[in-house]
Length: 178
Ligand code: GDP
Ligand code: MG
Image (cartoon, rainbow, N blue to C red; front, side, top):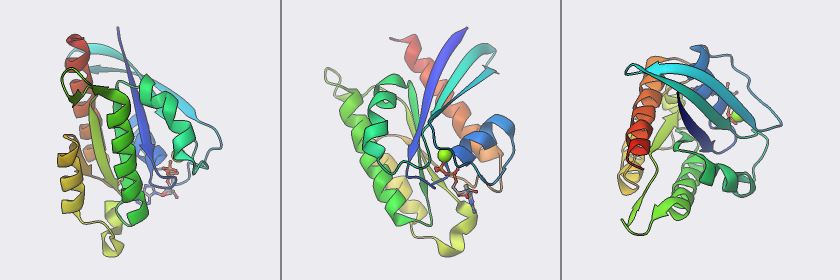
């Protein structure tokens, strides 16, 4: 059984918990506020392999990304960085987080980041009040050599399932060569 550890990072209210709960349960519940960090466990099978998935979802009340970040930054095998397309500040914060991941996980020999990351623009259903263009998300992801996907945790399951599956595949590839 392979263990895979993922962390969701992003501004409070970006929809980290909603995205994760959508993936784990296929449902959108609406309110996920929690005053503690959560660690979710799920067993799943991808490409015929049994996996033990652990996902860190930080406390939604904390605006101090900095202080909650240090541990998951070193702990996780892969990251889902979430922003809200209707909130530019959350996009700027996503940029900061990508920078921190790069700093924490840079392989100096290879000169590249040694951990898979996916950048997620959530709340696509709010595109009438969009503050971040899809192209901006794409450009940011290209800058950090990571995947990018716009999703709506409120409205759809499939995109979210696909992005987690893709990330987990990348992590599996990656761990194999360690
Ligand atoms: P977190 O602090 O990043 O974990 O954010 P939450 O998952 O708690 O979500 C914050 C708020 O945004 C909640 O009221 C959610 O119902 C709402 N929300 C999350 N995802 C979506 C989405 O895709 N569309 C819309 N319209 N609201 C969402
Ligand atoms: Mg949350």
